[in-house]
Amino acid sequence: MSTENSEYKAKLRDRVEVTHPEKLYSIQDSDGSQIPYDLANGRQLFNHYRHRMTNYDQVLDDLRAEQQGNITGRQEKQIAIAAAEHILEEYRNEHVKVIQDSQKKGQFIKGLFQRFGVGTASALTQMLDSWSEKIKEISHLESSQRSLQTWNDIYRVQKVLVINLLEQEEVSEEVRAKVAQLYKTRSTRESVTLGANLLNWKESEILKLLKRKDAIRYTKLSGGKNEDG
Image (cartoon, rainbow, N blue to C red; front, side, top):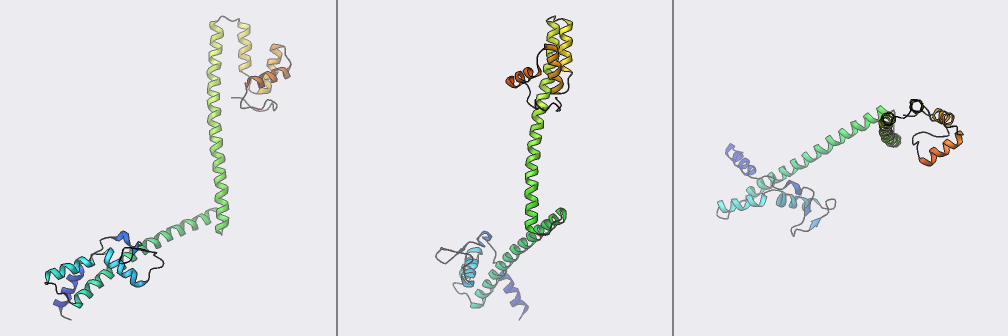
């Protein structure tokens, strides 16, 4: 085979290129009807790829125009080979992507197995499900904590305003001292006991009053051991 002949073949092949790579998995017959990818045979695949994915037909038409309608079988063969080579490269690139993605996923799952100390997919799934539930619980607790913080902030502001209001209204020092004493309590039970002493009420009466007025949101009135904000 002469060098000149080899160069000519190379030039012919260089004219062929992939024009529609997105049609790699969208197989059509000569009439444009869709063919299921997993059911298409080799001839249907090759005809689709060279005619619809590459500029195979355009290159042949250009050659005919350049050569007054004459085109040899060898020329057509070289163009068909070039189209096939481009198609195989597209397949190769797709497979490389799939392999790399599979390897990454495999390494990730392997890392999860090692991190959680499990050896099967089912055990890993159960572990992830349990963590999902724990994350939901943590989210709920964080939300409750934010609500409690807001309530505590409101309580502190009210405390300051009430004490200042009593002073501005020239309420007696004795009453203001009792109010301040109530604010210093640090538990529901302590507050109820002190309130009963100051008001000369029964503790049960104060508990009923608090429940009816919805005065305590974050403590159990019957517990007596929870700390208030």
